[in-house]
Picture (cartoon, rainbow, N blue to C red):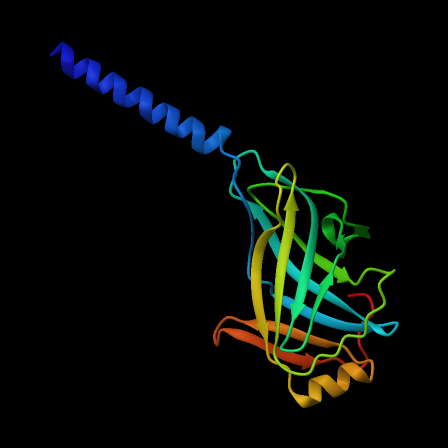
Length: 190
């Protein structure tokens, strides 16, 4: 009978250590939900990309991210949108991204991505594109891929972008895919 008590006590200690590891000691990762809205806003001969999404941590303690960026890829080119900003709490002012605490409950906000101001590039979207969203977590050597999104552009969308009209892609969970919407005139507050 004593050996049974010893075995049960040992199992209880092992389970306690596992729970301690999973809740307090494990670093966890930052994750991103499917963005509900993606906007392409032509601005000053460049392009601004906006994402409405929730970032959340799998760690009990949360994570701190230093930066978020987007890689826009199509068959001919790849561009990195490294300037990041986001809306403050409650949809307030736009804040230049320089660190953000991500809790288990998450941070739902609009994220804005622009090309580096010192690197003037012409972006030509000519076909379907792929957006890859990355983040830098404090004390991690490499960027973490948060999500990959494929969007279909047709000739009308491309023409509208070249004319300075923005395009919204709204997530449709019943299909499931992004539905494009051309906005005339485009709301510059996005």
